[in-house]
Amino acid sequence: MCYFAKYLTLLLLYPLIISIGLSSCQDITEVTCQTRGIDPPLGQSSAVSFEVNCPAYCSNSVGNVWGDVIYTDDSSICRAAIHDGIITESTGGKVRFFFTDGQNSYRGVLRNSVQSSSYGSWQKSIKFTPDAVDVTCQTRGYDQPFADLNYPLFLVNCPSSCSHSVGNVWGDVIYTDDSSICRAAIHDGKITDSAGGQVSFRFADGQNAYNGVLKNSIRSFSYGPWRRSMTFSSSGTETGPPSAHTTCSTNAQEERFASKSDFTVNCPSGCDGLIVRLYVIYGDIVYSDDSSICQAAIHDGRITTDSGGSVRVYKRGTEQSFPGKTRNSITSRSRISSAESISFVNEIFTATCETTGQDALFVGLTEYVVRCPVNCQKDFSPVWGDIVYTQSSSVCRSAVHNSQINPAEGGFVRVYTYPGQHYCPERTSEYIPSSPHGPYAGSFAFNSSIRTTPDVTCNTKARDSSFAKSRETMFDVFCPSSCVDSSGIVWGNIVYTENSSICRAAIHDGKVTDSGGRVRFYKYKGQNSYASVLRNSVQSTAQEAFANSIAFIPPYHLATLPPHIG
Image (cartoon, rainbow, N blue to C red; front, side, top):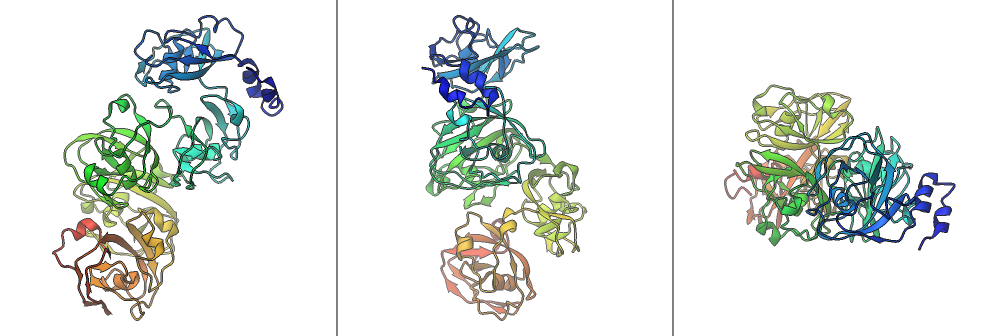
């Protein structure tokens, strides 16, 4: 039954929607896989849109499809809907389509197991998205007119410069429907802040939890259960909702992902512990396609093991090797044989040993991923700073200096941009001597937590709440001066108990002097014993077995040290 009054209330505010609302009031029509938009009674009606009920398993049936996103009106409605990601092959379902003007040409493309064909000029078209609506940076998914319209997709025109606008965003890939549409679209990488643009979104079921993450200069927030969600469609790729039946063992080799260049999965909680030993992952930032998607997403910091969540996966082609690394309490394995690969970022830049942080490729980016070649430690490109580097420094040599990649393997590294520093100190690490530098306009680092590093004192311990509750395994802190004579106790040598004073242990290990300074430490597994040693005017204390440790060198270096180093 049609409720004209509901749409008439939108007359003044949303004139673009009215024609759709008034003329789309049709009963749901049962159709077959072969039914076309041009067929009666659909093609003979003056209505702008129809809602039809498609059967399952139409992708392999007879029924031509011409076009992509916009289709000729003599295309099979249901096969075009599968092609456009509105429904799935296995379930079919209700679909609303819209008549629109004919196009000068239609492009054919393979999508969602349906091959559409190209065609020239045609007099009338169908599409599954209504006309675009102009919105502001603050417009939310549950605002009018979207809240009351039962459309499978909405198309909106976002203005530019929304990243610094008011408007909360909750979630990642899947967002609460009271999030700012345009700011969430920037967060999801569908549009840029500088250009804005047109983006399509759909409503989805509410989630038990939404994970907050910093992406594309927008910080989204975590949230608990919410009644309804929204997701964004990918350009030229998968547009449907997250794939069902995802488990901790799901990988990208499964047949349902075969025709997709990117796709979204909804990971369950609890993909760690025993599961980590059952389902192996290979790589870091870029993973082999037989890796557990959900464990790789935890490893990459996209979701947490406690709540799980939705992640978008991008297929990247063949990689020759996959260096392993420990992140977020999960250790990935190394693989030296070639395999197809996946990642959770859409764009990866290829760098040389000479590429600097002020390269034109990185202008305007607050976070990016680069592929570094091997043997950058042998190059002589400049490195200024330690932990935080000037933008004029070589990105890949800084990554080696910072122990982010093994110089013999090269690999992928995530880079975060920062404001300029008043001073960048010198330090020799991984056989690369960095140079000190005075004030510089911009800088970069390899750890996002530098932006929010908590203040520490001479007595702060790694087991304190700010570090113990974090999923990170690597932290950067700035130690005050005059910690040698403070009361903080240190247990161990090279590897220390997590209840040791961070700054006094750093002095003991020679990473900073009593003048203080920036230092990086790593969470590490517990040891059977910790030695008592006097070093750098700090006397450490012996300790029996302890549950957790810290160290000031990466875990893969610790593995090469002789036993009983503690």
